[in-house]
Amino acid sequence: MPLIKEKYNKEVIPAMREKFKYSNDLSVPKVLKITLNSGTGAALQDSKMLDVVANTLTRITGQKPVMTKAGKSIAAFKIREGMTVGVSVTLRGKRMFDFLDKLVNVSLPRVRDFQGISSSSLDDQGNLTIGFKEHIMFPEIGSDEIEKIHGLEVTVSTSAKTKEEGLALLTMLGFPFKKS
Image (tube, rainbow, N blue to C red; front, side, top):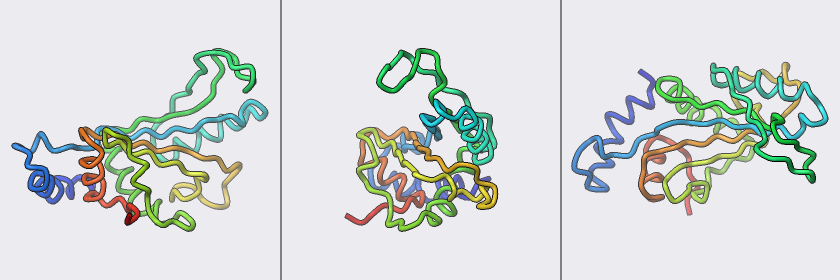
């Protein structure tokens, strides 16, 4: 069992029940899924970029990514309907907890000049979205094998009803938020 799931069951559920006065363990918010997404605007000029991004997401998550197609044409961005404009992966279950563990304990501490996650990264339903300018802070990416540096976005979806519940849940799971 991943460490973060064990921590959730043994520490987070009792602490959240006490803090928010939930009637039972099942009403305590939990992490539902994690979505990794990368827009590939550079793929319009360089067709290899799409393969590089897909390969990177596969190595980071251990799961095959899905290509995102444009819904409509946008002339200003030189995008036509049906063109591949992004790559995304959705993690659930064991892979999600393994990734969460790696994100909190390995990847975030490796980010240059990192002072913590801003609480404004949470939406009103307690979901967290973090944008990374470079994908190189993940341990699966060796510095010698980087073809092109690209950014990606990680969204942690929770079952929390409010921003306060989501913040408490993610803080207890070990996410390093800035002290405000």
